[in-house]
Structures are given as structure tokens and as C-alpha cells.
Image 1 (tube, rainbow, N blue to C red):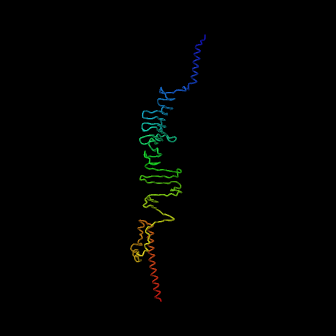
Image 2 (spheres, helix red, strand yellow):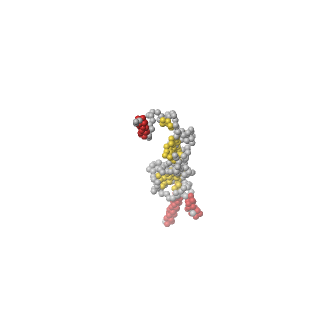
Image 3 (spheres, helix red, strand yellow):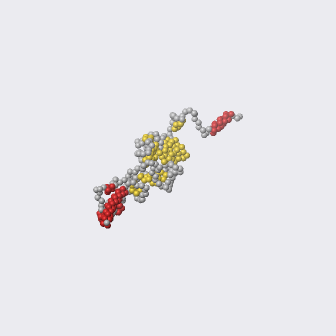
Length: 328
């Protein structure tokens, strides 16, 4: 006779199997209460006492951890094989940095960059022994932004301007494109070079403005060693040049002025080869000419010659009168 008990057992086993097959990929938890992994007293909906590692291989993963005493939590992505082995993503706080409440992300810059020596990182320092609320490029400090809004490149903690750059060959390049640009460069002694490159490399100061350009020191055009306020190694064209001269030779017309005779002038020319009071060709070649001083000297000679011509004209008129008297 057919037994009902084995049939009932078989039906129960089949029902359980079908139920397990339907819910094998789903785990549900009660809507209330917390879940703890590694802890018997979870205080959050999900609390894990330990690190979390997610990855497709043993050496390629993303890990989230809480750190140990003296360090903070971290999130890092690791690739431990190939030429680009290292941490592609790193957000952590370790004991090396003195401070609290900060983020340190490090990662590769650019697409398809696999070299382990090329990456861009930032460290946000909230409070350290050398600065407060400062953003720093890491792992080697290349750039720092302090709470006052001052950006320092190569300066360390000493940032003296809104943009402060320190380097053995500091250059600031501003360009319209890769072919048309300007370079501002400083030297070890504090010199400043302004270089223009392009199809029309002009340097314009105060374009369209009415302000003044003030330069303390000497200006050299065509020379790197200006000895005067303005030294020009080349030709100069101007519509007007005004020279201020203090010693203008009106004193030549004074009654007590001793006018040199033509005989004295002739003797000086024979001995020196140039007019009295006028520099020689050798002196002009060696020292140049002061325009104001030279104009005064030339005017003095003109005035002296004018007085001599007046004297000579009087003598000619006197001789003419005497000759006329002799004829009558």
C-alpha cells in the first residue's frame, strides 16, 4: 500500500528547494535596527569594524580604512603590478602631517599617463605648525595657497604677494597663442626682462592712457650699459627737444666784459686747432657733447663775433669819413 508520509516529505523538500532557488541572490533585513560587521553593538544602519576592500584581483582594489592611533581615515586605490604600479587614488591622513580636518587627494594628471613618477596631488592643511588653512601641492611642495588668498610657487610658507614666484630662473609667460606671447623674467640681481615674441612683437606702455611712466635710474636703448638717464646707441628723431640751460651768455654784452681780439683768437687757433672755449674733436669723440652747454658756447662765440663785427664796422665807417674829408 502506498505510504503518504514519504510523499509529504518529498513535497516539503521540493517546496524548500523552489523557495531557495527563487531567493538565492537576495538578502533582506528588517526595516528597523542596525547591521554590524565585526561588532555586536552597531550604532549606525551599517557599521563595519575593520577595513573595506573592493577589487577584481588581489593587487588591484579600492580600500577604505579607519587608520590607527595618530592617523586618520583613508580611501585609496591600488595597482601593484605593471609599470604604473602604485596608488591611483589616495585620500588619507597619516601621522606625517600635523593637523586636523584636512583632505589629501593624490592621483594621475591627464589621460593615459602610466608613469609612476607623474601625478598631481594637493594637501589641505587646516592647522599645522607652519601654516593654517593652506593648500599645498604634494608630495613635494610646489605651490601653496594661504588663507589670505595669496598664492606662492616655490616660496614655502613665506608668501609676500597675491602671486609670489621663487625659482632659479623665474619666468611668467602670457600669450595670445603658442606663437604670440610675452615673457617677464627676473635675474639673480633683481633685474627684470620683458620679452615680446610674435609677428608684431611690440611692447606698449600705458596704451591709450594719460598716466606717466616713471623710471628711477638710467634707461638704455641699444645698449645694456647706460651711463646717463637716457643712453641711446643709435639715431634719434624728434619734433622738438627742449634743453634747460642755466648759464646763458648774455654777460658777453656787459660793459665790463673783456672781448677777445681777433689776434688772440688767431693765435689760439694756430696753437690748439680749435676756437677758444670750444672742445676739440678728440674731446667730443671721447665724451660727447652737452647740447645745452654747447649751444651756450656757440651763442657766446656768435655774440663775440657780432661785437667784433660792430667794432670793425665802426672803424670802416670812420676810415670812410676820413677818406671823404681828404678828397675834399
